[in-house]
Image (cartoon, rainbow, N blue to C red; front, side, top):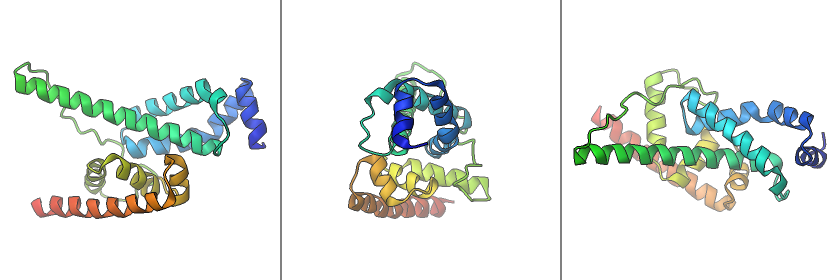
Length: 191
């Protein structure tokens, strides 16, 4: 289906267009979500939110980028929103324990999904260590690294998804690799 006609069908609310959208992007969006949030249930919830957002916002899609780029941008933003909210809850719970209002902090292992298609590590502990290290990167580096190395997107695709220049993506990737190297070196020195 020609993309312009497909987009118009989506804007017109044609049911077959939404079925086609889900068929074409459901697995790809889920793979992106699980790259950022390596927990199956949360990634599924976020992917569902992505399609709700696409459904509610398709009329605002201007066509300045490919539809897939726009969808990946929404997916990335939804994942980052989720991570920010989760981190804020952790900080709040931590502050409450300091203040004496003991609310139990969830200490379960969050990184439950290590069968991600972009992660080819055989050892679950190594996978967990890698995801924890990626999670320590500054947000812009985390986004670029995850999209490039875990989701296997080209630098050009990442530039389009993030709205950054190609040279900015390359620079962020370089810094992300350097920072990951330091984080992992420090981790293995402690072991």
